[in-house]
Image 1 (cartoon, rainbow, N blue to C red):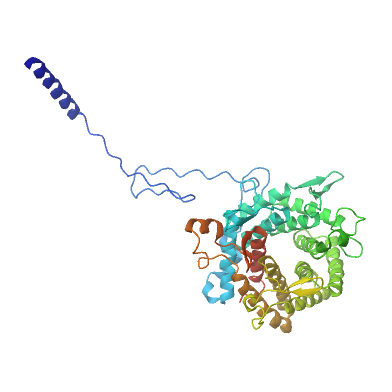
Image 2 (image 1 turned 120 degrees about the vertical axis):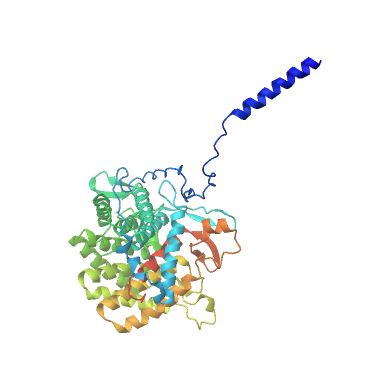
Length: 463
């Protein structure tokens, strides 16, 4: 028994000696870095010899620089972007400061709504924390246009890439006309998604991209060729599919929406690809719809025709275009709710709706307010070019009040504290909710607000 115990002790002692003789394992040079938040790279401590190699840049979107198939807009350098003139933002009026910050925050929200296939998440219900149903190609095209505009304004490469991919997604909803290779037609029938409206928005989005490629401009020209087929000799635009249809019976609301968009698209396209037929179509169209406005005024008609009239005047100095813009926007100003209105002082700066030729005291929407700001900013730009001090003094306070009202519809740090931090940062911050009484989100509402603010920042009233 003693021998067994003695032998066991010798074996244990030898094992301890062997283990002790092994060289120690070197500790790691640096502790492992904690996982980084999405989109933020991990940073190794200074002096670490095993600093990880930065990950390869993501593959470009289809149509992005060096990407497949299409070369999109090359982002404008930040120093050359219009945003650079606001470097000393504190020297500008308060409403201008809001417009700059508000448009950039809205662009970030819209970028977060972007999806891998190029479309945007259509809308969101914050109270239920779930997406909104009812996606529509027209709203997607409006969001695409707004993203292109903000990319040109800010020079942001990420926004330019998102806008380029969204344009490609919109073009995927069009096809080359089987009977005319120089014409591109939306694939949806107009009762699903109005073809004239959709084609017009895609043309505008391409033109507004920072430095659009020749291939994209060619596609815009083909869409303009489709719009040309919808023009009538009296200057009106046929916005339904069948030439024998009466559009005002099939889609009466479309009269105030789609023809003005078509004229604006042709006028904007004429800046980059001039053609006499475009100029003539816009001139006849502005004359026709100015007369239609006099017969039956509507704020949506003002908002869609004014940009076309403004472009026409800037390109041709046609006095009738300026006359139309001023007359329509004078009437629009009369719809604005003033601060001394005892019925709805909380909506001061917004605009009353019109239904059946009569004003309606409905909550002003972000979508409508954005496009009315856009219209007034276009008209204000004309006052600066022409030197019309009377109209300038009329439109400046109207713009200021409207921008102030729109400020109250944006989700910011101060009005989202009752939401959980990560949720509000990801889904709410920067978006414009639909109206003072509706907190839901939709891409076209935020897109319209962005477009209006960006036009305000370039019209001269921002100073």
